[in-house]
Image (tube, rainbow, N blue to C red):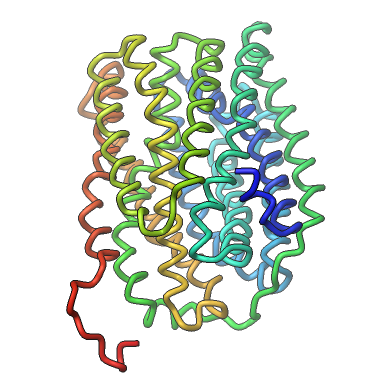
Length: 409
């Protein structure tokens, strides 16, 4: 891994360092933010509505964030993203006990922060990496981001358990703000590349690459899962089975150690040829381990899920992102249109997140509060398994003997 890291440019190394500090700050509070919101009403409604509001905010704010990127640079939008992420935690600190009355504000600010940040992230990955080396870069980045996650959950769990009431949560939220500010300072070392001021939004809508057009339904399906399962269901079921904040912190620390080992192996041996296979293995694994934990919510099931889930989810997300980036690069004019592709990506993804939240709220009407969590936890990851055939038909190799005419080249 160190040889791979040494081959990166100086700017790319600063980019990785910046995101490492940002990830550490997020990991300090990340898993406990869902628990904090859950404790405010003791149901899953507040968590679901929070996810719904930030999902809607992303759809409406991504265009504005792209406009900011054109007027300044994608790197500027990422820095603004750090600032607005910091603001979201300040909102939680200011309103704390009455936060449920301001959940629209929190969700909207979070969605805007995510839009600003991810415009910069996606553009940086496209600009600083190439398709043949992108998988390795994403896995190396995963290792660095996960290292922070090893210490942070355990540290947070210890802090929260040492204070009465919600005071421990406020302490870790303040720590998150500090690390977000450090990330902002490091980002000043990363210049990034400017983008054209001309928008190709409607050109991309009407005439995208063929691979991108077929990826719409995949991105929509991914949104259905990420809007609920990845956002709060994983945290809540592990919190329930683990039995408290300290146990949850210990569990997540152990899970992150497993993830680092998996990232190391994947970074060493992965390449673009194995993306679909890696995605399929990850999808089946996360589904089966979720069903196991839902059916048997005991310690041994939690251990198995703790080993499988960090590896499987990283296999899924890294492969998915790599395929999305490649589908953008299939457009001959992708360098001019890449920002518009990134904006349009949020439409099917955002709609999928909203549909996922509504599905969860609909399930809430038919199942009691105790049954809702395990049933929904085993239901949503099956979506990943369902989209494997779609990815196969998008990215399968041409049959042998197929003649490609010059007009198709």
